[in-house]
Structure formats: structure tokens, C-alpha cells
Length: 194
Image (cartoon, rainbow, N blue to C red; front, side, top):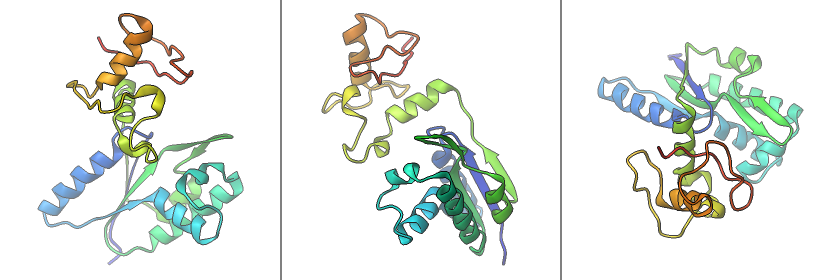
């Protein structure tokens, strides 16, 4: 059985994985099985098998020709998977030389999706998801050192951690700025605590 190919896409941190997990749970409760697929993982496995990279962070440093070829090979492999498939992929990927399209024409031509779902939300929600996502910084197990205080966990109903609030209030005296302040090492993001 060929099955359906569904692509869920959006910018990093928008909530694609959350949407996919909820959809998979709902579909399963209705007796419909879908296999979740992460497009980036497929690309990484191809690159690793070719000896181009050893970890996922190195994927961003590959030249555009390699990236395009890896995207196409991953799409070809995904297209051959039988049954219903739900594909998680970024709309774009930041590389040292700019942004790479996550769903270029050659990927869509190979997969031939039945449905494409674009997940969107406001910028504040994306920022909060990124700041509270411990999987984004696996070496430390949490956010970068410049925005963390050991042992502090999420406390705000909107997902804002105390260490974010303390970090900003520490060098702004009261409330955070509306624009990036530069932070302790120049990487501080704007936060809205109103």
C-alpha cells in the first residue's frame, strides 16, 4: 500500500514536533497508523554513511552542492517508505553561508506529498520554546551558559525561566528592553515579560 505522505514544516522552534506528536496520538486513537520521519535525520544518516560528517552540527557546514544532493537522496529514501508517513522538516536551515530551503522543488518532486502543513505562531512563542528546549544544547543539557543559572527551572505560566528574568533584570535594572541588549556576551535575545 502506497499510503499518504504528509509534510509538517515551519521554522525551528515553532512547535512542529508537538503538532506531529498530537496528530499521531489522535490518528492512532482513530485506528490510523502513521510513521513519523525526521527529514534532517535522514539527511544526517546519508551524510554519515558517505563519511561527510560525524555529528549533526557538521551538516550546516557542508557546501550547497552536498546539501542539495543529501536532500535529494533523503527525499528519495523517504518516498520509498510504504504506508502512511508524517515528515517533520524545517522550512529553512541556517548555514554559515545563509539559509538553505528546507522544502526545495527537488525534495517535493521526489516525495510527492499528499498534504503540506505549515505550522506558524508568533515570534514570542518561538523564542520561549527555544529558550526552554533543553534538546537544543545537548552538550550542556540546557541553554548556553550566558543565559542560565544552575538549578533554576521554568516557573512562569508562559514558560519564562527565572534565570532569563534574572539575567535581563541584572543588567537592565528593571524590565528587559524591547530590542536585543547584547547580553553578557553579545548574544542576548529580546524578551517581553509584560
